[in-house]
Length: 391
Image (cartoon, rainbow, N blue to C red; front, top):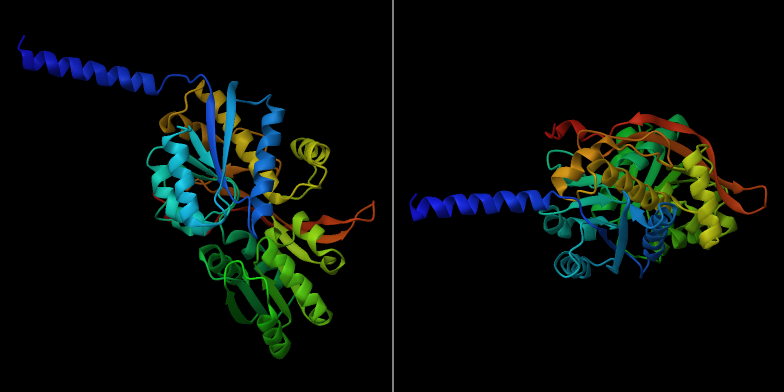
């Protein structure tokens, strides 16, 4: 045998050994979570982190039976900070899976670096970029596609017979997609669109414009502190006497309720999850979240919890193999009990699920909270799924 052939066979054997090693069972699972923990959107990231941690408490701090380590980094709602955090988690900490990003303006710039080698579980934003023709085998949206919850409120506005609706959102990808979603299912009439800066807290100009235009209803997508301030200013201006206020669940959730107080009572909002959804997984999640953190969970917390439980189920199915080729088929099967009820992945690895109408009202204890008020969409597929060419 020639020296050349010996070298080729040796290199081939080495490559096979490396391949087998890469697909072998791991000793532990490292999860990298980049999320927003400071700034106007901090409440969202904190909820996602706390929901994920509660799931780890329920699994005995394991994922698929392996010891689990959650490494959290704050992106401060800034793309550059997010890039630095992702690079650190991938290179220094050598995490196995990534998750946690709240805002699409942070997610989109960092996704190529993550998806090149790791599976990403999106616990919040679900941009169009990865829902249609740009779908990616390593991207799994555990929450929703950005348009769908607003689309559910568009259907609600149509059903209520509103003819003139004003739309308000920040001028960034998630905001634009949210308003596109509302328009997709709103068939009622005229629309006035207003885009604000991301992180804006003073809405005097927008309030004046609403007073002058006198729409039947306002649909707003203003997550975190933005929504808190808008609702307070809308109420202080007296506009709630004549104009219906409609919101996606992320602008009418428990964090916003607590920060706004009485003026938010009666707000209708849509979500894929509600605290009073009656299933065993959700009852346990809500009760234990309240006990552990002293507050009612939000939909963000439910998304963090479900992401961890999905990963736990997938790692069990792979026998502890954490490479993307092993994880992907296990994740696609989504064999876990979601707190939102029925859940499965579409061909683009975005959810097929129900969307519910919630209303903010006083509970038995006299405190304001969201209550289920009906189902808006059943087993709903996002509008981009059929553009995805993944099998």
